[in-house]
Image 1 (cartoon, rainbow, N blue to C red):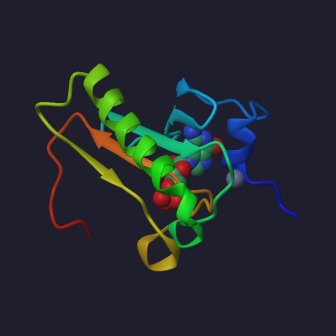
Image 2: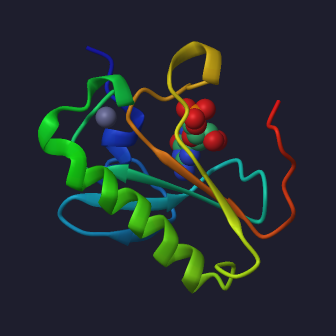
Image 3: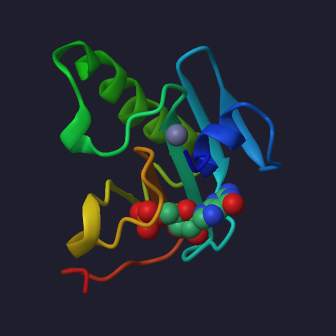
Length: 114
Ligand code: 5GP
Ligand code: ZN
């Protein structure tokens, strides 16, 4: 089985600029940031896509979203605004199949996305 990149980051087997971690959630800076703030918030447990969530994961998904808001607050972008995105599978451009919430901010972003 191919090792999962984000599992390797979560387990500290691959270096990442980690900004937050607890027993359920890890957040780290994206290696190829698009806006000035580009943080990925992931569950510690491997879940490939949102399609693979189960009924017990509702609270976990809430923790990802709340953690994004708290990191945005730390970065001073709560009031100016930020975007949070889960990409799922091919049409959305998901490249790493371990659920991750993108926190994007620090500049004006366009809508709708491409
Ligand atoms: P996706 O396209 O799957 O929604 O997003 C995957 C994200 O992971 C991309 O924004 C990409 O830059 C980021 N990424 C890919 N490899 C690494 C890595 O090794 N370390 C970190 N920190 N981010 C990565
Ligand atoms: Zn994984």
